[in-house]
Amino acid sequence: MTTQPRVLALVLAGGEGKRLMPLTADRAKPAVPFGGSYRLVDFVLSNLVNAGYLRIGVLTQFKSHSLDRHITTSWPLSPLTGDYITPVPAQQRLGPRWYSGSADAILQSLNLVHDEDPAIVLVFGADHVYRMDPRQMVEHHLATGAGLTVAVQTVPREQAHAFGVVQIEPGTTRIARFCEKPVDPPTLPSDPDRCLVSMGNYVFTTATLIDALRADAADEASIHDLGTNIVPLLVAQQAAHVYRFEDNVVPGATARDHGYWRDVGTLDSYHDANMDLVSIHPVFNLYNREWPILTTSRALPPAKFVGGGVAHESIVGPGAIIAGAHVRHSVVAASVRIEPGAFVEGSVLMDGVYIGRNAVVRRAILDKGVVVSENAQIGVDPVADAISATVSPGGVVAVGKGIRVVT
Image (cartoon, rainbow, N blue to C red):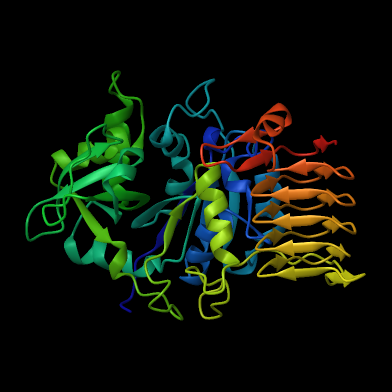
């Protein structure tokens, strides 16, 4: 690794996450629990901290209390060395208004940039599941002399409409065209079934970022969004390049999980990503000690299995008690209790869920504190599920925080 310049990281964590309702009814999307022990924001923060980028502002806005609390309690860094991870709420520094877009969020938080005086600013999203060594992206940015570098990944064409789609100049890394969430996404020249899309991770030369934000702020027609406005602006100036995520080599990664990246923005994709973790050979390896996914450890007793309770191909968190129940292919978080005769399959149970005697839970996501009463069923009758829960297009049943499901 070459010596790198001073770097500030800004994490965009203000999204509402409407497609993940009801999981985002009471929390920001980056605060949504994942994998039994983590929150979505832990993945980007782990990547930055593992890379040694230890000055991080997390820009928050919607329903940010649980996210703010998680960051302050789970991610303390040493003040002796000037390191920090700090939540930054909408400060209304430019007038009595909230953030009007991702670019405006950074504009209103430029005091962080001026205080740190970095040469490079990383702007990363907060709600994807992946491992990445951002140092390699910074090195690529410096080598190309770009003003902006966009991390890109290939996805099937039918998924590309949800992302910013990139076209590059042949034989270079310079972006020729960038379309934010196009209806008819352009495909790769070599593959008509796949598209090159933005991961929502950016590296900016600081002067380029500041100039672009100020030009965008003066544009009355702009919606002040990074993908819609800032990236196309810099593409037009021939200052924007790509960094291919497939080139990123993470310590401890295997051939199987190399290049893993999931946008868990829908209930179905969220459920699928959790289910991958409990498969016999998961694509994403939570147990990579060379590049760990970090989070807080809570003072809870170990999980307990009593009365013949069993769990097959499952993650079971601390403090959970499986008493004479059968759990299969599920993620069971901390302090969950499952009573005798209950059956849980293909489900995600968040902290403090209670499953009563002889209850049945299939292909469900149960938010914190959900109570499933004795003999009740979830994921068995779609008509009944729709009365008290949200049923995804893929048939996953999501029950909101603290709801009681009765027979």
